[in-house]
Length: 270
Ligand code: SAM
Image (cartoon, rainbow, N blue to C red; front, side):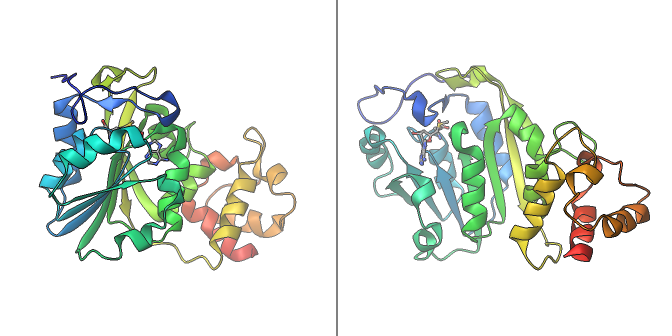
């Protein structure tokens, strides 16, 4: 059921496109996000962009504490009223500028989660900020644009498989959970959405992650070109030797190569 009532403040809000403000108004989607997250006891949840607090309200009921970052100061009074004397801390700031590690330092918790209907214009910077802050959440559940969910969760051989897929899959097991129609939001965006889940996993040993990711980006540099062309600055004899072990040769394109094989090649040529 779609709930179009706006909660918090005086009930009126001037929606800002520049902040990606499309508020979730579908109770069944909110409930499903909470079910799929299966949040364990004693958890701290980080939310990016509470809006008027529809998702925040559900998160607070299933966790020990919630920290929620909102950039729009016009939403703050409403949020502070709504979550006064609760387990929710509202921080008025740009999430990308925060030292998240410091923000969560004062909390005691067993498990850390990030759960949010994020502003789509900064999807990749948000995920990179979480990874770079080294807070290692057990699980990240994000509402993202459907095409982005497909790119993040693609497997080798699929058209959406790219260097960002390899980068993210190095840190997380990524699954698209379900699609969300544009009609579930107010105002309605002109794209469809999906909920994507990142689950923390054991990493393949790599001595220098930055160099490894540069190597992966180089491999994908020209999408239509072969590995031989894209990696002409590397030792192609070694690249060929590893590819051969996996029944491939230098005419292969990067989109067919798995994270594990990229790591194996990198570890041999470094
Ligand atoms: N969570 C709410 C919901 O589901 O109804 C709102 C989601 S809306 C897609 C994104 C929210 O993120 C907006 O409230 C917007 O103001 C906020 N936002 C945008 N950029 C931000 C940033 N850099 N840091 C923190 N919040 C941001």
